[in-house]
Length: 302
Image (cartoon, rainbow, N blue to C red; front, side, top):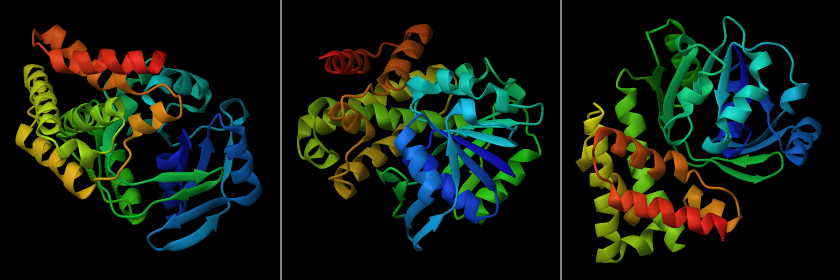
């Protein structure tokens, strides 16, 4: 299978490395010239659970990528989705499927401007990944990937599921993917955004009753919106996820916190902002999500 990874960040590199090791023909498309040059000159240096190794992979900017793909996987930050997919529209053929495993809501609508909905797949992943520098990626520990087609149940679902599992990426083609996507969005709205706003990791947040109450309220608001739009999210499961984050991943730096520390735009628009907008459309009030959203937008502008 010919696979193009759009967004060769930490997650994109881990997926690309594993898929290449499983026999897929993989290339990366990114905007980071130093990262592209390092991969092309030295290969992708990988530090995975099974050991350290280097893969001779290729990377380029979108304008220098040629030839259509069987599968395009989008791993850019949510705010860059439309620009990224527009830049690789020449790689999308009549037989190409586009898979988004990004954070947040709304990626499908952006991708649908350039690919038919019948060829769009969406999902979530919890695979751990960290970019150590140009051309260097690390992944320690296991994660799970769930995905499904936006419409229908094309035969390609089984082929992708088999390829991902062969690559050591525990993957399930899950008909209830909307529930999985909303569950992750609500978890991120609760933990990712609050840690970013308070400049802390999950442990100290969970050490205070106020922190636990804040996270819990965000979960309840998100679950109420999900139910209103017809997605049966189990709020108790999300509460359990937040508790695990506070106790077992005390020192983890969430992506939004990393973004603010680096002076980058966060994904708040497609996480708490998406819950807020969906709530307004469904007639469900989300005052705490809206407050967190506005405060993060202020932090971004400072």
